Amino acid sequence: RRYRPFYKWMHRALRELPEQGAWFYDRILELVDTREDALKPDRIEALCQRAIGMLRQEGLSASESDYLPDHGPVIQAGIKDEALRARNVWVG
Image (cartoon, rainbow, N blue to C red; front, side, top):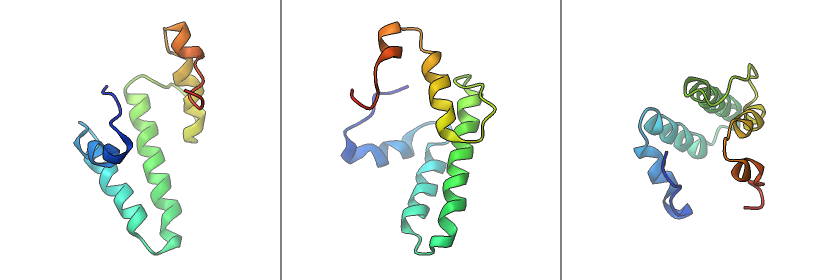
């Protein structure tokens, strides 16, 4: 519910978010710091599942999918502002 900070400070701002911000910050830090490649898929999966749980809890997605990208179109479809909903997030 805040504007995204300049890319240079995004990782610090994540830690300050209410609810799960510190959890996500710590898990991402563990992910990038680990040298054991075998651990990375499980850590990424944990991040994705926690994000999906939060999207559902906030009422932003009712998708039953366990695949995080499947929630994007559901969230976008729920945007009430037609111009914003039609905006291509990859272009800006």
